[in-house]
Image 1 (cartoon, rainbow, N blue to C red):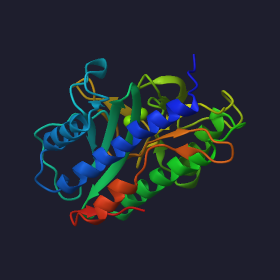
Image 2 (image 1 turned 30 degrees about the vertical axis):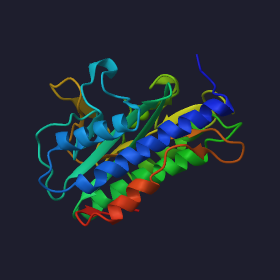
Image 3 (image 1 turned 30 degrees about the horizontal axis):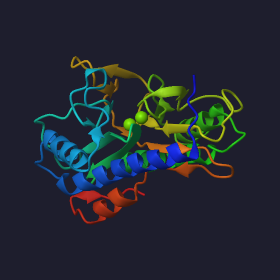
Length: 266
Ligand code: MG
Ligand code: MG
């Protein structure tokens, strides 16, 4: 069952979504070589609670942290730990916030220092594919139009591997709601997009093959061929002519510019 949101509920969700953006902004100054990823998690949790909200992921299906931090070949659901960040690392950081009974969800892949040109291209293409999907998120189109746009751009145009097993999702009073929003599919298929539908679109794209595995920790998903992976996510709502993006990268990207240890990917 799909829960369509009223205009008022969407405005409440926008606040949760902006708080996720602010949480990313709050951790960016700390992403540098030598920092333990659990430290970033602590900063995020403190920031969210100080703002009167709750971490959206902590306790979800038993996940013990505020952030998912997935490094290099890790795709998603990585666990913060005592592992230290080093130059050349990719950090895909996914964050959810629950405020006023509604969730916001957003992910971004950060690049610590210099990486190989093909890795930087992977990040650019994955982020661009998110916006290709968002372009399709208008009334009258179908879910499959979003899925196809992402897959076509990443796989046909750029020969990267689109992960199949993990998908975007509806979001609202629940972190994950119907419908699923896969990053692959056929044009013209799936439900028709209507006003009031709020979804998280989140391409997960591998430099190499699309195949994944799960670590023994029961959470971390990684690329089977051990090549780097990227993940970008926005929470959006369907618009008449244009989707309304509820989350924003604006704050975190401004913070990246002020952190000399991070590379900007456009
Ligand atoms: Mg997420
Ligand atoms: Mg999500």
